[in-house]
Length: 283
Image 1 (cartoon, rainbow, N blue to C red):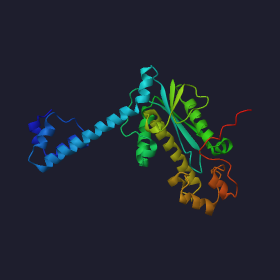
Image 2: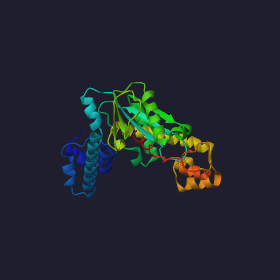
Image 3: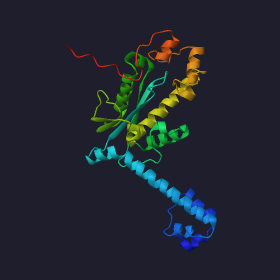
């Protein structure tokens, strides 16, 4: 390892490439030497390196925080912890897709977050590839449009979640679920409100479910051009409403959803995103 004195004689462009672009460890004393250097470029480089270090520390703390639920279970000896989440509850068209993912113990993936917070589609796909590569096991479950219309979207989401868990090649010892309780789940479970932002395993499932469904909607867009399914993924956007009005209802539209029924001239039959009210108590 070159000395600090040798590094200070190195061109700043090379130091930038080494310690910022390639993120090599910064030798002790180099930052202080750069900060006291009379060259403005050297002082600017020191600020950039410190900013990157602070960002990395913050990301490390965020990832450790995302593992607190998993950590509690790992401490109890439960290593096969599955995160479960779904995508596609609100759209007017296409299936609802769920995913289950079992991550390695103490796993960390920089940038992993709730899929709704990652607005860059390309970045979501990159994370999905890494998660599928690194996961102990992962699987998806789908509830089709016909099932959504038959049992309603709330229960179809639960059905997709159950199918995802059952499709895992390893039976999980515990499941962390985004705000739900899965019927007939093959293992103990815990529903966590906003779990995709609080649990790394659920965030992983969120990414896999979202990217899987997005690809399905892109394929449906090729089959049914003119509805914009590849761009809005079937969500009730102004573009989608206009296409419903001008082109009519497709076989992949959810006929239990109000806007679709309205386009068909039918009365609404359910509140799409909520379970039916409980039955009144028997007298």
